[in-house]
Amino acid sequence: MRHAQILPHEVYYQPVLLQHTAKGKLLLDRLLQSSGLSLIEVSERVIEALGDVQTSQGVVSVLPLNAFSPAQTRTRRPAAQRPALLILDDLADPGNMGTLLRTALAADVEAVLLTHNCVDCYNPKVVRSAAGAHVGLPIETGMSWEAIAERVAAHCQGVPRVLLAEAGSTHLYYEQDLTLPFALIIGNEAHGPSTPARMLATLTMSIPLYNGVESLNAAMAGGILLYEALRQRQITSGYSSRDATPPIAQGT
Image (cartoon, rainbow, N blue to C red; front, side, top):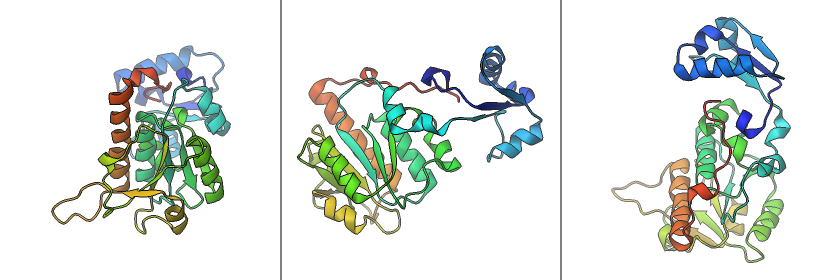
């Protein structure tokens, strides 16, 4: 987390496990040479108990939660115009949530807004699937639809464009102009979009499906839609991913 300027409260490490890989050895050297860190060497049994994976990589960090507030996260991002705002409507699956957060950061989304009934974005499975996205992506949690509507209006500069992903819509995603500021709603995996989501939406749009497939996984659908927006942005403005690369500490 050094590149993101986040200092862990504590770092628990197991030197034998860390030395199993070249990256682990490099990380161990960095940890031992770092000043200001609270380093605690533990046994293999303890490090495995601290994490929730079957095979520990040998290090577990305790980070300050306020470092991931939207205000703090925005200070770590380069200034840029980001047309897409992602709204997750009661998303329940941790894997989908984490994958969408990772995809949103990779596609340079402005922020992700989570409704009250979404799975906890700090759920261990979400954090693991997000692969570091929490460091560079503003995530606003537990939002009411009134607050979401206000954020959408501000983001869209008073002309809300709220696109709702829905299988069967006659409006295809690649026919929409996604270079202008817009919000994208991804609904619950089992029940689909909620009533408030439908009320806020200004247009439904779909991804073409063939061979009797009724719908796509929420994370897959979100990725296709967000990357269509990025594709259009690159074509029309020459935007490059190098123009807005968030500071993610690899391998942490």
